[in-house]
Image (cartoon, rainbow, N blue to C red; front, side, top):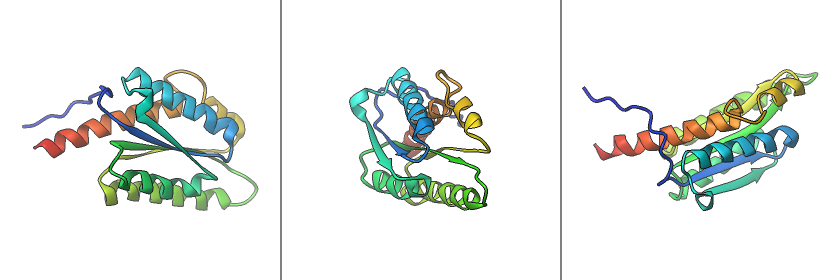
Length: 156
């Protein structure tokens, strides 16, 4: 039996981060958390590339471009969709989740879903506070784990 424990060593990894500009008061905090997490796990800051996109709907496209470049071991997608007066949020959330998931399956590069889907701005801000509970930090940790797992599975 083979067992592949979580490997949190990011020293040899290059990570792409795609961030939605929409709701930037939240996404900038998610990005800060992601960078903090990556650096704490050993990813050198010069091996972290950040691409900004207009909104969460565009995350999948940019993530696919980064993953297809063969320069990145994983791509983290950060966004924030807050429920409004209509069902618009449902359509954005579903498409963002679908397109980010497709990046992983079509490219083989892990694409991490770090999109907040909250009812209020207060809920979003609570999930983007400093520290290890920041959802950007958590997404960065998942990226390192999945990139290392991909490498181990590719080796044999």
